[in-house]
Each structure stands twice: as structure tokens, then as C-alpha cells.
Length: 152
Image (cartoon, rainbow, N blue to C red; front, side):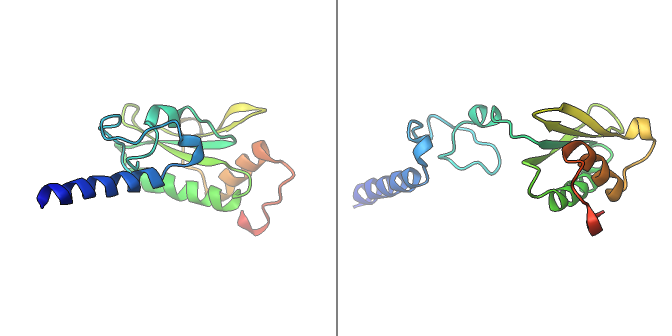
């Protein structure tokens, strides 16, 4: 009886894994032996992380912050403000913790045309950016004709 149940459970698990594959992932076979370790939030049937990290979507905004200074919440808040304002323009906002450099807080905008542009550097400015001022600088690089209106 237990062998019968075990066999049907394995079949049900395989059907569950196969159902979450998209057509573009058809060549990738879901199996625990192919991907024994997954990153947080990654489903078992997702392609390995090496394939996903090669995709770069632009324009993207990177907020590098000192993780030893506990600046993650400030970084997340500014990222949320920028995503809300430029929701149709930004492809992604990345939070980049840095435990090596003490006191680092850099905002970098990467576009296809301009490449990587340092929008804010806390060491040079001597302070953190106000949301309004950071939005204006991102707007100037991303789309100078974009009206911030009341968002700023």
C-alpha cells in the first residue's frame, strides 16, 4: 500500500513541476538533481540562477548602500519612490548591499544610450539625497522632457 501511495505522490509532484514550465523553458528539465540548491524565492522549476543573472534590463537603477550602517530601509524607500514616479520608464530598481566599503551610498542609472551614470554619491555630496532632488536627477538623465508635476 505504501509503495502504491509513494509512486502516485511522485507522479503528482512531477505533474506539479511540469505545469509551472513556460514554453521558453521547455528545454530545461525540472529535477531536484539538476538544481539541488536554490536561491531564496526561486521555485524548483526555475532555470538555474546563472542563466537568469545574464539578463540585463534597461533602464535600470542601482542603489548601492552600506549594509553595516543599516541603510537598507532608506534605500528601499528611495527605490520605491523612484519606481512610483518612473513606473513606465524604469525596467528595474536594484538594491545592492555593500558590506566592504563603510558609509557607501551610490545611485547609478544604466541606460542603453548613456551607459552607467552616477546620479548620486554620498561621499561627494556629503549627505543623503532628498527624494525630490533624486527624482530630478534621474529625470534629467532618463527623460529630460518628463514633467515631475506634483511627484517631486
